[in-house]
Length: 432
Image (cartoon, rainbow, N blue to C red; front, side, top):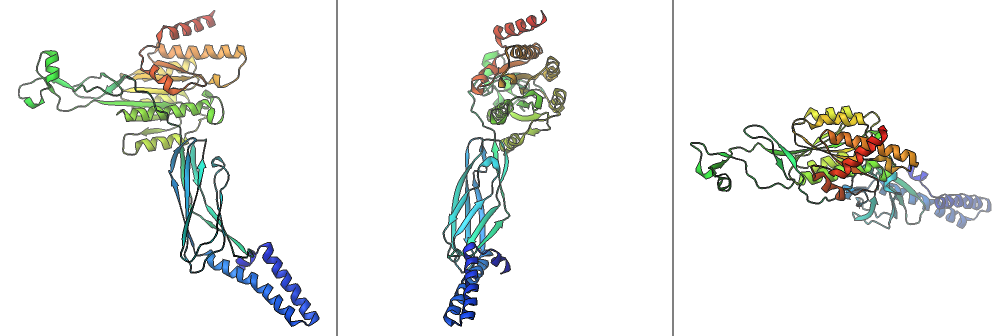
């Protein structure tokens, strides 16, 4: 009751002040009718405080997010359900859900009245343009009586997580050759992203079941061929994300790092849908196998929270990838590299791996002077040439580049004479 009295509004306090003034006047003037008015004015705020105080502890609240995981720029619908657990109806309720700054301003919703054991739902939408994991809540409710004499605040401690994942862009279906990895009787061979129905076969041996004869291969080779008893091949891919802070430029959702994170998410989802056993690695400590049920969601959750690393380096990145690397396809989203760092990345070409680099020229995210631009282009060209000389396929990325347009370039075994000529000429010009 004491807390309810502290919740009296300006109107309620004015009623009490008027009651005291009327009571003093009644005593001085000897007017009994004026004393009755004073009693009425004093009782009304007290009854309002009692009314609000009783209903304060009789409310139940639940919150649901639809959906709980949304891409950058998309909206999620937040539904609040309140139920009056008491026999008394409530007054007007003002609902305010606390939100992080990135999700916008706090929504305020007015709920007129809840009858005895009555429930009602209200909804609002939130939208985030920045990746991350945010907490929605707690909910704050302001309870008032019908006359507006008393107002109390109640906070429900529960919060619900909202995960804002990177934007996933659909990629075109191209024949991106990777490498099968396996052991046993077989040897590594290339496979298209979407896979061709090419059964693993071997020559017929005495005692083999004739039901295992592969007639298509038999007709092609002229010898009796049978399907293998086991198929050890599995297409594997490792997506590598460069999180070094000094390798990226720009700020906010348009930074070069955000482009790389979105590209990593898009490529990972695309390859996983194509049947690859997928692994995501970064120099900041992320190492995720997305091969289980719900693996895609786990991978996107990690990418939702990944941040630039001040201590990251290429040597650490190479070491992390090689710890559990056993061939397959390696696709790296790399920021600015030096020639020395490009040479370190050559270590990932071992064990029959096919390596593709999306080399982000983060200097294009800056406004540079002509001389600084020329120096940046020279350094970028030298790094790209170093990667290609070590057997990498290199796809250049500049500010404004769209991943779906660049993706087909990753399927080419050579970057073409134009790229090589430009790189060589740039390096030669720098030497002169």
